[in-house]
Image (tube, rainbow, N blue to C red):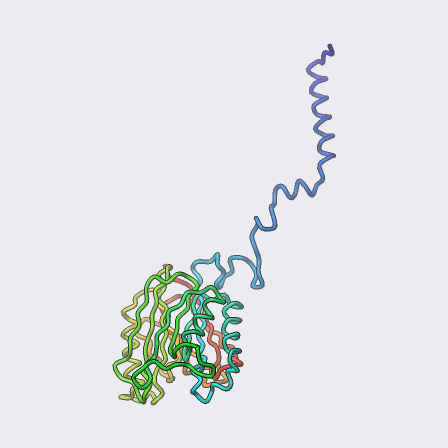
Length: 284
């Protein structure tokens, strides 16, 4: 039997530890302390996982995209949409900006369902009555009925829509609001085109819209083609517009009571209104 003194045993232990350290590659030790790949944080084309404006990790950020699609098939602007390229343009913008909400005017119900399916968003659709009945979109047919929509990344808890008390011509105008799982009220609308002078149909609708938004309370944002330059925002809400647009500037508006709003206007290729992007912060 071999006997070791305490001093010799201590020396032998230190030697074995030193030998083991030589056998372990430095890269293995680094990987053990800093996991990467699927288990680590992901990064996309827009930078870090929790960006300052709208990344999924930043629950205080909120962004919205507003577009008028001119997609009924009846309006003179429809040829420009080069259907279905107008739908691809919406989907591409939603994916590029990863917005929290989308408001659409002059849309078709089946097209909105397709956009929602391709982006993974939830949606609500408000059918516009035309000559006393829903209007079937055409060229091609099978695209559902004409109206407005709100799409959201978060689940929708509730929704509400209604017609204004007056409208001009044969086309009814409506507002639509949804409340998301984060408690954000997202509203959209498309007002009449008879001008914004006092007493006009548009001005009456504008006042009714202001009352609707005032009742929604905190965390409310509205966007739509209001066909006027003067704001319909109730007291306590800011107003942003597409004044910088090259197509019909100044008549698409965004109102809200979220914090630190910023607006960007982006040229749209396949419709007669440019796209409006707003980023803001949710108030506690």
